[in-house]
Length: 343
Image (cartoon, rainbow, N blue to C red; front, side, top):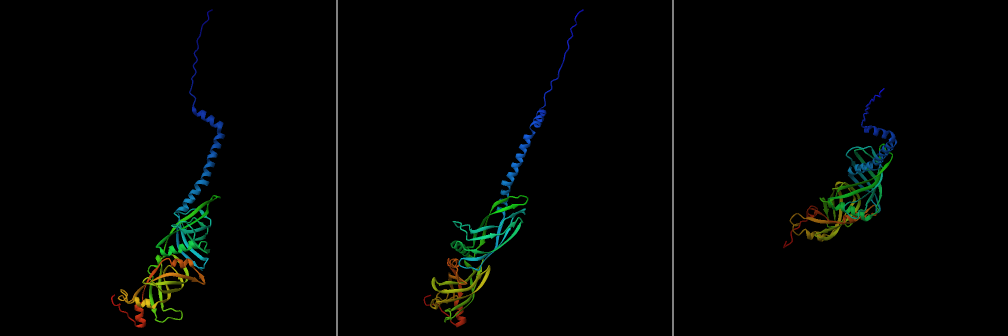
């Protein structure tokens, strides 16, 4: 018996292992780590939104808002305080679901250093409407007399001034419990009084004899106020000059200077010799006696209070007012004047 040798061939197919299987097994094994990482990312994103993005967006909204001062009224003026009423409008590009807390704001001249507040205002709470009307009326102590006097002077002498309103407050965004700190800062351009440019005397009378108050001149003076500010001034006196020489004192009583043209009664004791001499000089002896008087603020008294913050402002510049004295003398006293010899 012979042994028969048999050969058997066995083949085994080796297939490459898919990567997806490894990833699947990895995820199944470490799913908890990925969940923790995801939660951390979400928490960080929320924290960044709440503590970084939202405050920046809120501050940007406030920065882009426009503040317009519609009117300012300074009433009940005394030496150390007054009542300040401000009507203003705030406009923003689009409405937002937010509320801004009331805050204390300061006002100062933007173009003067150091920036010293001349007034403090208590702003009320406002919302995120596109248009906000904000009206304030409050007792206002004068904390810095020099700064307040400077504001009045700049407003009187200039065509326009820049005033900054600034204060720190908090904003509440709907849906979030946290309040975010923001700074409200707006620079507002205000029209000035242009040194009472356009002041005129539409009616006047003169006398050669002084009345019981020592006055020999009475008239109506029209004073324009080009600004949006109303001033309760009171009784004001003005040093009066003619041809660069002091010739007397003029008075305007019970002055409340409102925006637009204001008519006040005016009385004065003026040197007759200076006036009569000027009426005989050219060009006044040829133009009917229209004399250019210059007025400089001297004193301001309101209900017994000496208001230096007004008198110093009024004394910072001269206002030229042409008065037809020659016409008044001819009408009232039938007096006419010829030019001096050699004129």
